[in-house]
Amino acid sequence: MIIEIDFNSEKAIYVQLCNQIILGIATSQYTEGQQLPSVRQLADTIGINMHTVNKAYSILQQEGFIKIDRRRGAIIAVDINKLQALQEAQDDMAAIVARAICKGIDRDDIHELVDKLYDHYLGQ
Amino acid sequence: MIIEIDFNSEKAIYVQLCNQIILGIATSQYTEGQQLPSVRQLADTIGINMHTVNKAYSILQQEGFIKIDRRRGAIIAVDINKLQALQEAQDDMAAIVARAICKGIDRDDIHELVDKLYDHYLGQ
DNA sequence: ATTCTGTGACATATTTAGTATAACAGATGC
DNA sequence: GCATCTGTTATACTAAATATGTCACAGAAT
Image 1: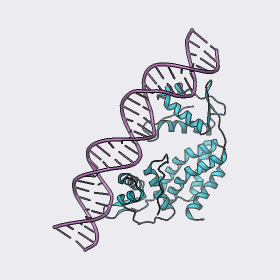
Image 2: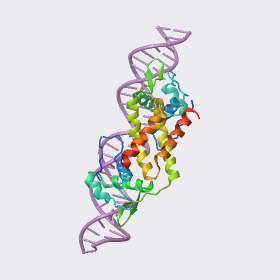
Image 3: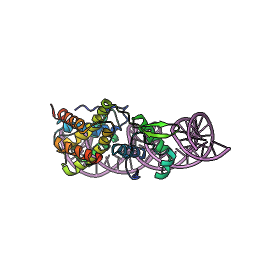
Image 4: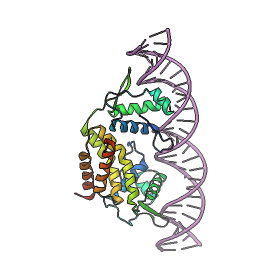
């Protein structure tokens, strides 16, 4: 999978890395059990430091997207805790919905947007 | 309106301040034309520095939630640009939806969550 | 004239982000 | 055994972001 980092982004590199890998899992470009590049290898191909990749991997492990094996490196292993994930999604979405309400966006607009994203990620 | 800042949060104070004020607008606790406290006054009541409040106000102005008048200070003035707001909402939501898909949350769960937030903010 | 407003210029401290280099223990392949 | 890979840790450093503090200014309100 091609990982693209925007070095002019206001978002930290390790955050972009996390999002890109999560995106890859959501779109089935990464599948359960698949091996990710090693921290050194990925750092080299992207052109960043090893520790930046390691930080992203550590976060992904803590958030339950990968497992890190000393032998094989990082492998995709999504830990499903739906209740916790729902709570986190709600927390993240609270600020977005508040902004949307202020800007005159009604719930149907958001619903449409959610469907658009789901279609885009899951293919049509 | 009561503004609560979590000093142990990983989110910056000025970001929390922005979110709280936007939340106030969404829930009609702040209404169009209403005057916000001056930077010094709000900084004093919260117990933070004047410049931190000023930074939040500047961002809110740039994002089109308030207007800053040299005479009267900051007043609520929401600039509605629905197309731009929709695009921003989509960008913000992209990462959340990707995470949700990985965690086995389907679109109906998200729709339910959106309705829950709209109900909560707009009052039942 | 006094007091308020936002704003700007400094200085400073702390934290975060990112890089760089080195070393270590464990596993793999030869 | 030996070289090579893995994640991990430690240390050091730079740069940027965050937050505070103090002082000053121009404009407006009373």
